Image 1 (cartoon, rainbow, N blue to C red):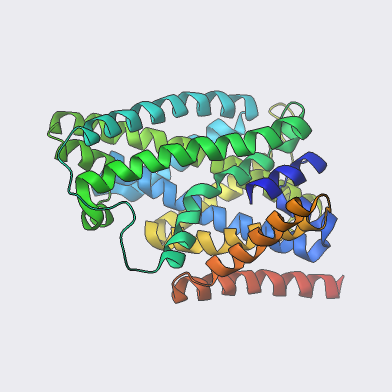
Image 2: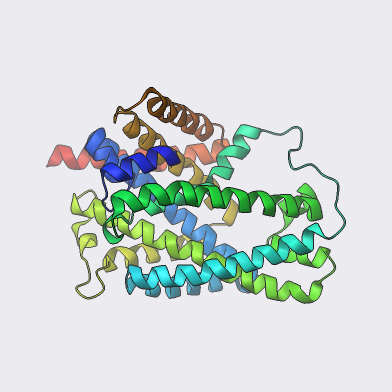
Length: 349
């Protein structure tokens, strides 16, 4: 998926990501389906991350904190990509500090002895949900118009980001399972804080809890920016209401699109829980990447490049339909609803 995204970003350095790639390579309907899946799925991701912030910072009032975080980070995004980039750099530093603290303390404490690769369960279903955690590199491609030399920068940024995140996730997962065990990790709403407490440093638990909450703000910040830019690209083609294509004269941001995204995220935060939001997001984003890989396959190129795109396509479809049945039904239903609206609109045009 990362390879396909990088190849397409080099060919089409525009805002919108696979919405643009699908339109250019496969036709308007494929582009719409990708964009619709991204906007809907990543809106659910925004809600999941906002709720995660709430559970870390103030568990008793998680939804209120989640709503306030959406409002605050949307305000930062509205000021332009420069402000977003600066805030992201600051939040990344906080994130790395928190993760490093948890890993060092966790690995220096007694281990539960549980394996990082337990036997049993449904590995494909787990992989489908885990895909949620690695799908952030798609948002890099959605910012094509606001990046210096995007045809060179984005193809480099995607594999670098994916590689760094893979190493960090591996260390954090190893630490959490080692300290909390699989069952303990599954039940935890604030695993990093629980790791520090279990490691015999309860005094640092509050610091890590706050730091982790602030760190997740960085994820939410980039999510809102990515969804807003995809909504902008879709609105330009009238696949979403044209009013969402308005760009602020001074800040050069799709301000109406970002405000609309924030409003929908707040509504989802008020109704959903983290696990359901993550599952739903995984299904729609896997659909998005299936279209990414199919678009990349049409680029031609070497046999290896086409094979990678083909394997990515099959993998996305396989993982999508091994998710929990309720998640699959909800995701397919929302995608079908978008498709019906698209068809009805174009028949009446």
